[in-house]
Image (cartoon, rainbow, N blue to C red; front, side, top):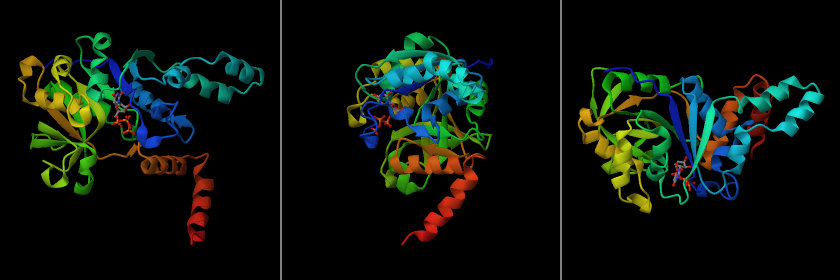
Amino acid sequence: MSADQVRKAVVPAAGLGTRFLPATKATPKEMLPVVDKPAIQYVVEEAVAAGIDDVLFITGRSKRPLEDHFDRNLELEEVLRAKKDDHRLALVGESTDLARIHYVRQGDPLGLGHAVLCAQHHVGNEPFAVLLGDDLIDPRDPVLPRMIEVRNRFGGSVLCLMQVPRANIALYGCPAVAVTEDPGVVQVTDVIEKPDPQEAPSDYAVIGRYLLDPAVFEILKRTQPGRGGEIQLTDALRVLATMPAEAGGGVHGVLFTGRRYDTGDRLSYLQSVITLATERDDLGPDLIAWLRQFVADLP
Ligand code: UTP
């Protein structure tokens, strides 16, 4: 199997974000700050760290804050330059210089599968990564390079799987798996979207990192709306899992054991902000001291 370089990432950010209203009424949830950086910037930084330099956002009705964040802000730069505040000037420039950023509008949010299909023209006929902006993978535990390795070894598409308590499996896509000779990699034979815990084929959850073969596009075109009336990426993955390798089929899963935060859910979001802030040199010591006191004072 020849090694394909993965050059492009697709970041769907056109969901309605209803779990986070009213914050997400006019702002995509991907723009919510995790400490002092929008969640989406961590995600783009993760893609860039894996050697990807081309990022396509699938945007919805409120795309302005996203576009502005990855664009220059000349007025702000001017003010900071005049103040000789090089530190903050560098912070403002960070997101602008990260990668080549493109946008496609989804129109109607018809589901994650439909959002990925909107990327077909831009991606063309090469393997690509999909990163969901509300799944935050700790930069110290990168998983994309491992997923690229697995694609180069087995071909087809690669999922990122995380073991979760059975009771929580109904929040995720859940794969049926078979072992491979690599203990950190499984073959995915089927995927069920948000199964009842007693019907779940495994206790692995599909989390928001995918490495997809371009064969997925033709399948998505034929995929009918499934659960929730949405065109589900999961339904296309099920088809890929049973297709022959020569046709771009085959799905494997990397077993991820690193740190990951779900910023699309309010409680997990709060936990992610506190966790990451406590680990920072500039904020951690003061925050931890305050937290200890805060908890001690709780009734
Ligand atoms: P979610 O299932 O989390 O849906 O989408 P949502 O609408 O964003 O959030 P809630 O459940 O209403 O709070 C998973 C990912 O797929 C994107 C979302 O932006 C998110 O990154 N998505 C979903 C799209 O881009 N388009 C869609 O039509 C649906």
